[in-house]
Image (spheres, rainbow, N blue to C red):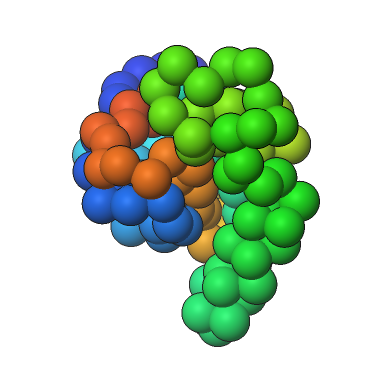
Length: 139
């Protein structure tokens, strides 16, 4: 049985969507797991993780626009604005998405579909350092 834990740090430059598939696969290659499950967990309340199409940037553009309409950044709508006008909307976007993912691993690579990638969804306007905890269980 193989068990490993680690962490990757992603520097975000703005409110956007960042593909992190390669960073995770690099960590997996160091673990040499043949068959396993990987759990990813972002250690923040204003960013999230998801799996989505990575072949067309239009998909990510549409996702960002959808969330801008769904969760407006109007400080008059929220009581919690201590860290800025994007603070509470960032928490709501995180609530509506995911902070953890469980993904199968084969031959030290994520077992994703042809058009799938793993993404960090940064909900804050300012640049951030995001920590993602990784737990691998398998052989």
